[in-house]
Structures are given as structure tokens and as C-alpha cells.
Length: 85
Image 1 (cartoon, rainbow, N blue to C red):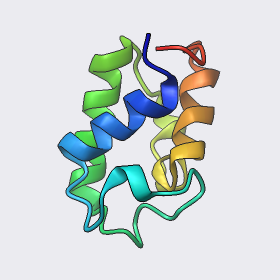
Image 2 (image 1 turned 30 degrees about the vertical axis):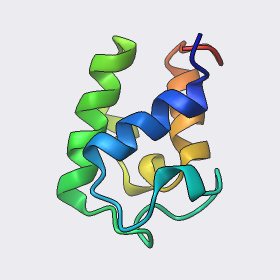
Image 3 (image 1 turned 90 degrees about the vertical axis):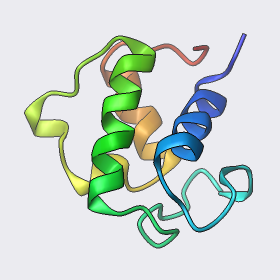
């Protein structure tokens, strides 16, 4: 079983176009400072929706939601995704 953290890191690695390896990121590291662009954040959002079979509501479509791994985890948990993916 994959943890939520591992699943998010996998999506970020595939879609985030980050300048650094996702495995070296702290859970509170600023993803935008690590190279996440606005365009890539949309790809990350779509991949997360597909991975977890959820839809981010409009009020969650903010830069803050995708600022860090921990903020993504919190958003997914609000949408009913458990700690184990």
C-alpha cells in the first residue's frame, strides 16, 4: 500500500516539472520555490484528481492549496482521501 505522501510525490515527479528530486523535498517545502509553475500546478491538480478520484472544488483552486506537500495532503484529506492511498 502506498502512503498519501508517496502518492503525492509520485504525481509531483511526473507532472510538477520541479527543479529538484521530489524525494528530497520536506513536506512543508515551497513547491513554487522548487520550480512548480502555474501551468505545472494545473497538471498536478488534474493528476491528483485522477489518482484519487476526487474533484477539487473552486474554492480550493488556489496557490496555497498546492504550495507544499502538506497543503496538498490537507486538501485531499478534506476531500475524503485517507492517509493510505
